[in-house]
Length: 184
View 1: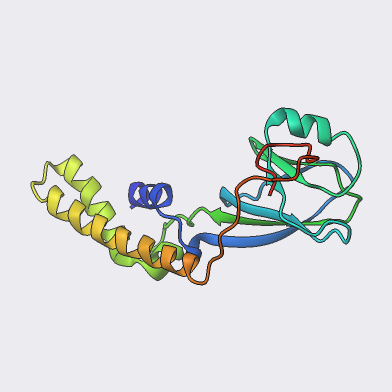
View 2: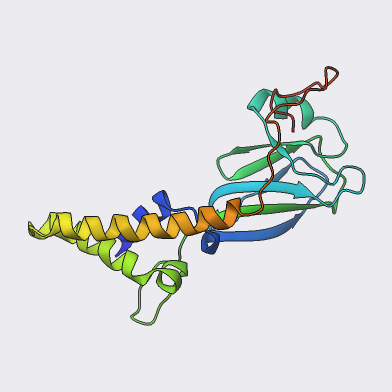
């Protein structure tokens, strides 16, 4: 089962995996990622001056901007630390929208987001892995069922994401803009 959970977490990105937390800054540029962190979706602040989405930047940009105070515009993750720059005043809230790991299943009554939204996906993932250990000829059938369910769940998530979506340029056309190329 644990191999199936790991595989599902690697392959799916669906709303059931999402979490939003608010981190209160301590006047520095750094804070720790949560223990259930899998992947960042977005970061934004409640800063009254610049209340907008932070842009993922390269390490050098953060090293430069994390040294000056101000309204955060950029972020960078290194290991279990997220750095923002410019660094915000103490008690600024940074909202982190991210994908979470699924809880491990130890007892028969344990649940996680996978068992809640797609128990059959987990079953077929586990069956597919078990065929490797027991040399079972039904692996292709289990794998096909897994792929079909995973594709359906991912397609539902994409439809939800793209419904009423707007299109915007992936670059900043302002000639005076200084910063990473992708400054939207």
